[in-house]
Image 1: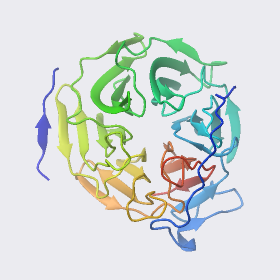
Image 2 (image 1 turned 90 degrees about the horizontal axis):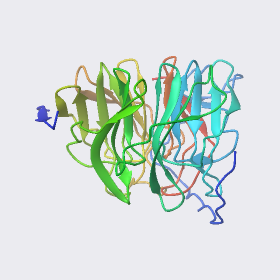
Image 3 (image 1 turned 60 degrees about the vertical axis):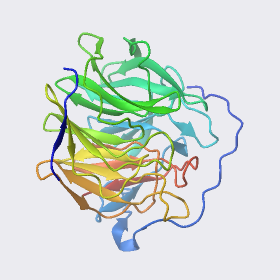
Image 4 (image 1 turned 180 degrees about the vertical axis):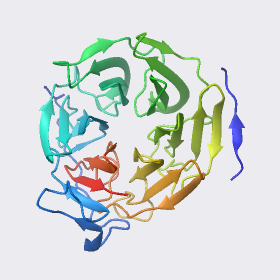
Length: 342
C-alpha cells in the first residue's frame, strides 16, 4: 500500500473470589496432528511448525508479559486461574526445557509493559486489580547479577498505562499506546535506563491503541493491530516509528485483532492469536501472520494448535515461545505452552 506519513512533535497474590468462566468448546482454524509435535524433550526440539512444551508451573495464567534473556523466557505477572493477580516470575530454560521460579515482582500486576536492555529486564508500567488501574511503577532485574527487582524512575504523572506495545531503540525503551482509565491512548514515551529518565516528547501514534503488539526490526518500532478498549473494536492497522522522523502507516494485518502476542524472529514480526473472533464459538483467533518490513508484506503461517489471547510471547534461537493466555474471550486462563518454529 502507499505509505502515509504522520509527523508528530519532534510471592503473594491479590485475593479475589470471583470464579473463572469455563471455556466454550471448539476453536477457529485449529491445526491437524501433522502441525504439532511433542517429543521426548517436551517440545523443545520440535519437528513441526508447532510443538507442545511443558505448561506454566503455577498453572493457568493470562494477561502476562514475556521477555527472553540468555536462553530463558520470563513470564511476568498476570491473572491466575482463579482470577487472582499474581506477582510470579516464571522462567523457562529453552536449553533444558524446564521451568523455574524467578524473584516475585514487587507487586501483583497484569498487562505489564516489559523489555530487555543489556540483559536487564524492565517493567515499565502495568495494571493492577480487577478494576484495571494503570500504574506507572518501573522495576529492573538482571537475572545474571541481581537477587531481586529494584525500583527505577516511575512513568511521569498522568502517563501511567498498561497493555502498551514496547520496543528497544538505541538503548531506550519505547512505550507506544496502551490502556488507561478504560480507554486506549495514543501517547508514546521512552525510558532511558542509563539516565533513569523519561522522555514524553515523542510523536503520538496516528490512532489510539491498546492490546496491540509489536517489535523492533532494523531500528524501527512496528505496532500491529490492537483495539480501542472494547474486545470487538479490533484493528488491523500497522504503524512504523522511525526515530527522528515519526510514524508511517504500512500494510495492514490480514486479520484485524487485539489481545495478540508478538515476537521478532529473524527479520519478521510474528503475530499470534487474539480476541474478538466473530467466527469461532470461543471468540479467540488461531491465526498466525508474519510481517516482513523489507517487503511491506504479510504472510500466513500455520495456525496455533490452541487458539489463545492474553498471553505474552518471546523469541529465542529462531523460535517463538507462547506460554499461557486464555482459550476463551475475556477470562479463560490456561497453562498451555506452545512453541513455533516459523
